[in-house]
Image 1 (cartoon, helix red, strand yellow):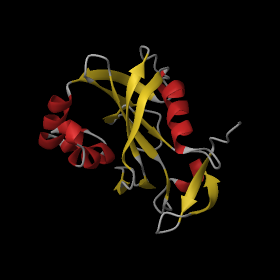
Image 2 (cartoon, rainbow, N blue to C red):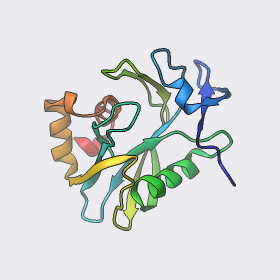
Image 3 (tube, rainbow, N blue to C red):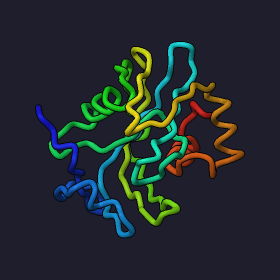
Image 4 (cartoon, rainbow, N blue to C red):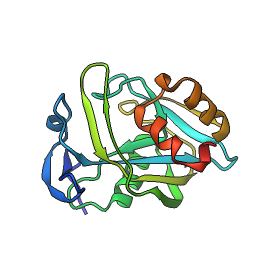
Length: 175
């Protein structure tokens, strides 16, 4: 299936799909609720893969976050979008993909005034292969023990994406 990754799925307040819009057009000071996802990726040694968003990103450039996040295209299953983004952003496959926070929703405002407003199901998976980053998406990667990352998120939340900070509060992985 060919997907139009330039569009996002729009949602009503109850999370029902209402249509689609150009991705570039929905991210601004009045961002409508739309569908996204986040994926936390474990390496074989038990550490978590974290990434720093590329400086060219429209929202939250240069911010450290979970392995990757994104938007399913209209008509695309969320799990297919997760796997597509893993390949496109990090050059990895995924095993043991598990939905851990199906109803996560957040609204965050970047320093530049751009708003992220998403229903954002959260997944955990295991990496298959070594990361080869797409520089348009990722500035750098690191691997860190989950408990160490959890402690950093609690002590310096300003250094990370708002969605990672909020997701970690709900995930035993970061205890």
